[in-house]
Length: 85
Image (cartoon, rainbow, N blue to C red; front, top):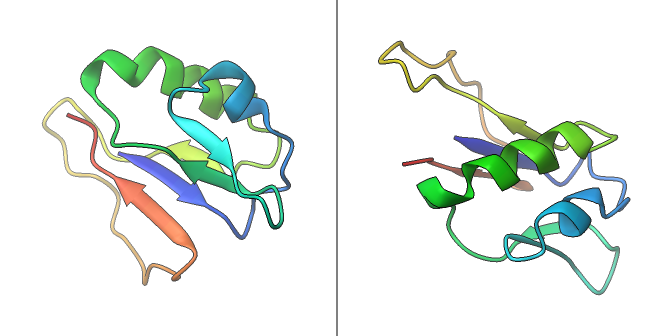
């Protein structure tokens, strides 16, 4: 699952640079915006964008090995989570 925390985003644009088909920046503050749902074929690009994010606004959560993802706390309204396939 991709977690996108706009409150942490500093608008550096590294996600857009590494995965322009998945990420964009809004016109107002330059904060990250997810362009579409993440497909399995996108996982390498997502991982690269997460690693390149200087503020930690993007992160991968949960596990694909059948384990349980970490417990979630209340999700702020400026946070977007998407399930990876």
